[in-house]
Length: 108
Image (cartoon, rainbow, N blue to C red; front, side, top):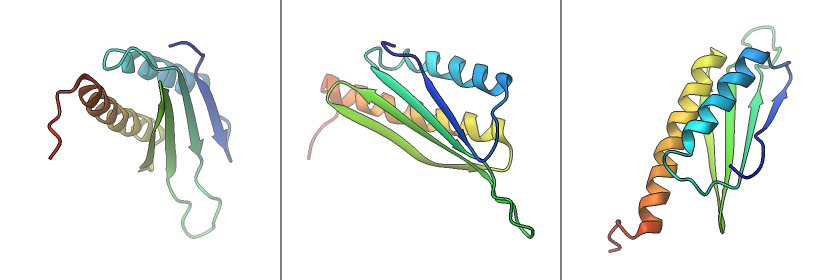
């Protein structure tokens, strides 16, 4: 990856263990497409509502040449599970993007 990973946590402080997990998962994304130019991970903490706190929301923005891939729908009660779910979705989306770029997908 050409630029370092930007990790942002909203409404809570992110632990070093979770930052390391995100950096590890990001480095694994390069197996699927090695021309990633940037990666921004934004994690929204649960709200402090007194009846229902909510879930962690993880958004990933991947910069690739000429495009940006966004994963914006991963919500889980556990932060580690939310990070894994978001990066699994990112792997699928990045794999599909790479296939399209190589011309392996038929256009109807």
